Length: 375
Image (tube, rainbow, N blue to C red; front, side, top):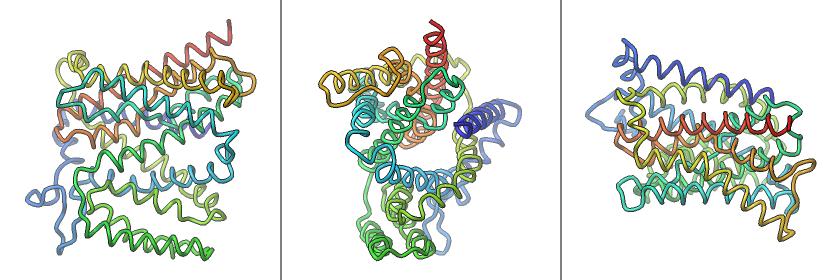
């Protein structure tokens, strides 16, 4: 829980620093540093001796380094599904249903604001919950929130991440290159077979994993999906060790780089005017209202139908507070914003909206739960 707090603080600092630099005297050089193409004639793919690779620092972070973030998330999902909080139906039913409600409601609310417009494709933006930030806010509340609710939120956020990963793979894939997809499928069979043969040497998994990343990157499916696919092939006996090894590099190097690069945006002169946009309304209402509404309603239905029980030492008022904190989207929401829209000005509106909604949800949830416990 202390780690979550530290990660959250580092990401907030990186976001603030990046947005200050992107709107200062060094604006152009700072934004260009992340976005400038190595080979402008090659578009988004860098043709180095016919190898199609990412063509800017931003693209290398989003399509390359973030694969390790998704690899870590994938291993955490596998661990929870096999030996953790989601390993039995009885334990998993409430966070699974709550997570579904917390994804569907924000997507529907976004669609209400953007149906029939050019921005409707961004419905996936408010679906996500940021694990680091949400658990970080809960950790600040200390013993005011029972451990069972913290575990519930963690399980919910992990299922939420799985939902976001599937959403990216299915709905944010503009075109498919079948040749690369077939070669990638062949590469994936190697770690699958190694897992079945109970091979323990990690290098045997990583070598075909690099081929898998390259093929997925060039297939049209977002390259980060390769990280998740490889994660599910890693032997259970090696997951704990790998998660421990990757925790600090991913959380304190890769995610801060992601925050710096993706929030390097020139703010419009009228920032409040940019929040009066169909996208902004959809993201703000989706994360701030849709998240708690979806989580609360699905949990309420599940408990009333006796499919599940509330976490120990918790009540319905606390469940609403947990839903509010789950409205902190940040990492995944910003990531999906960059996939949903190609126009940089529209991406900027979406990213500003995500930051504003996450800040509002985090503050409101924190104050609500703090006052609730005192009451």
